[in-house]
Length: 361
Ligand SMILES: [Zn+2]
Image (tube, rainbow, N blue to C red; front, side, top):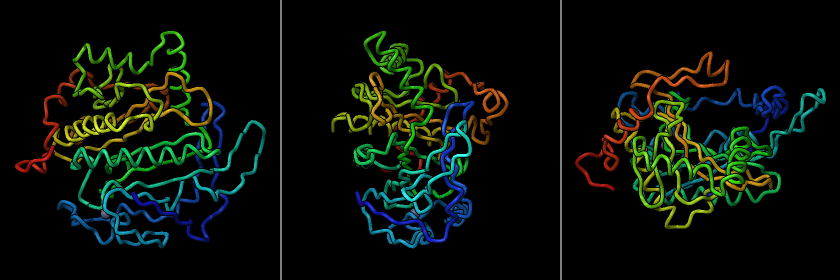
């Protein structure tokens, strides 16, 4: 892993950047209006429009040796590469906000926004990386989590990958993002409270109870090994939603031993290969590492897992969030989780469709 650090270009708006409290939803909103003028890199990476991406793209800001928008030049990295986002959502130089009223709580949008390139190869994806390469990535996530969670002003380290134009990303260069924030995201705050309550009543983690139910039922399991279980949860909201859950309970990824991490890498690969093989296309998703916050509060019972929320219902049909989801806050699921799990179980999880005929496992 190679680390880098670059400052935001001078002259950007300093004022429209803060974190505002939503008093009705009781959650923080990051207002990063200073990023409005950032170049939309997605459309500049065309890679031959219809053809597959090449190993190296001269216009890609993530490829080794290329210049980024902030002016920094990427090193000739050989496996993973981490750098501070040139247009951060949260950053150490965010201005001090002005509080309008006691009801309107506000925080400076301080923290770290980082980008993690999975591979120097522009044409690679999580699904075409070997399980050993994925294991190196998991080790990079461990190192990042360790470093960022140790900082006193950081309350949560959110690691996520947005994949595909359907979720707003057009640059296929394999990468994810890290937001290390001075507040706890609502999802993590809620899950932590729920998991702690369950643990106090039952003496085990809620996720391990869910995993056991899924493993015993079997109807929604996609794949499993001795270290992790991959399944569509009984309560899935998205059609192809899936959890990759380590069998042992750890509050975050740093708790995994090397053996557990290697097992998790294999499980993760099984899922992402199946996603792409399902419709023989790059399968869009939002992947999130669900980990306990690091604000010092009690996270007893929190069980780290990796969650995939793919927005597609069919090859050309998006699940649109509308009245019930956006207006009401609850999901209407249009599909039956057992059927979707059977679909994913039924496709090859070992060889990616673009590599049929070659051997990789
Ligand atoms: Zn690239």
